[in-house]
Image 1 (cartoon, rainbow, N blue to C red):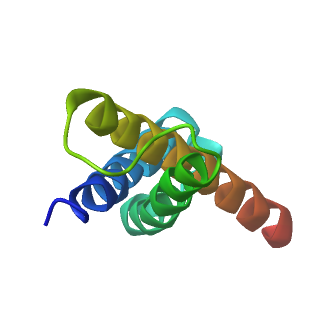
Image 2 (image 1 turned 60 degrees about the horizontal axis):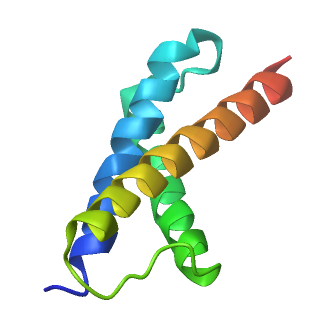
Length: 93
């Protein structure tokens, strides 16, 4: 369970980050489901990229790892939701 907890935190934070980005950028909003799905994917990708670049060590449950998982998931989710919303906007024009 300890090995999956950072991923679960990143996915949840990604969903929150995607929905937050949708609220802050209403022109790029994909709706709650779209924001959540793109945020979940972005949260997973954001967390994975930080581990790949050795910015976060994903091997334990301590406060720095939890904070890193929350931050990377939230930011990754918000960024991917923004990119997806911008692409959807550009295609629909």
